[in-house]
Length: 211
Image 1 (cartoon, rainbow, N blue to C red):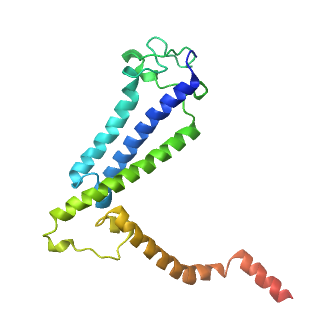
Image 2: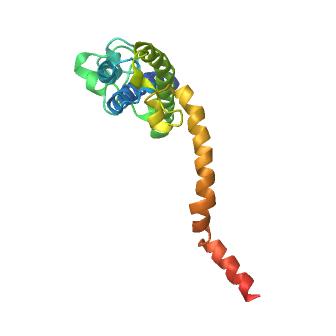
Image 3: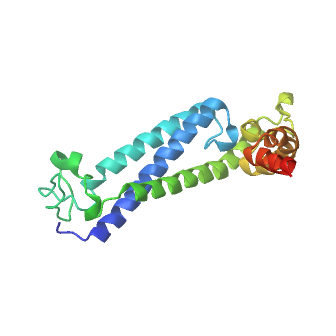
């Protein structure tokens, strides 16, 4: 291959991260708009949020696979081959766009481990952006619904149910407080009963009785 593998890897990493981010935030917006989790909406309206999610996914796919047409990389026209050994640096042609991204990881392409890492970071960023923008959307919704008597929310609701009526940052302390209370009751009740029948407990009781 006639290109620097490290330069190829850096280029691929940036392109893949953008693709994963757009696809992740788009999928998240479709899910939360369908389920009514308004705390993560990018817009104050479910229909617009759903359409935006679809548009983000399609944009991510189109940009990722069509970028070689206007961004120089290891896919110069006339050099695209399946084994990626003949690659030259340049812009791809329409006839070779299907194989432009097919670069072996030993020549700078992303292997499975690196793809997993970049994808995880993209998902985390997508959730963070949705949480921050969702806070602004909830403020707009609250202002629009301020005259509606039915908008009062239960201060004890948490988790996904809480996100239906409040921003993520406001919902997180309530969810954490309820989790601590619930796990304490669960541990003292059901888990302690189950622990009495654990193998280590049974062996320790048997050992104590034999003495």
